[in-house]
Length: 157
Image 1 (cartoon, rainbow, N blue to C red):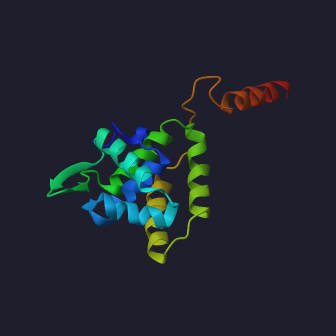
Image 2 (image 1 turned 90 degrees about the vertical axis):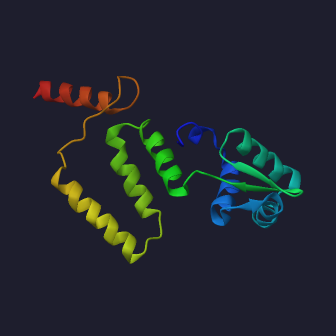
């Protein structure tokens, strides 16, 4: 569903999508008003991004009189989850835990958020391993260099 367009959404197009997700159905005038306040974009700039998103099939259009209504079939949370999964597919497995720790540390969380995270971590604790295996080929990360150094050091002892 979202895999086709995830990697093609620019930072500016995200701004437009967030307005559409917030309103579910919205006119270009309404999108322009929101983004003029946030980004100080000219109407033509916003219309350019709307047009790109329609072309990419991220936005649907429906003509009502002389106006177009914009909506999306993409669920915001599913879209973000899919984008994060695609991003994490390109990261060394050994780096993922540190990245998640960074995101947690860098985020404002509610007590409910923390409870949910603790529940997930408790489940993960049961399947935790001593060392996460690297999923890269030599030359894609530092794991292989580190392993070679450890092997050389162990061989000297």
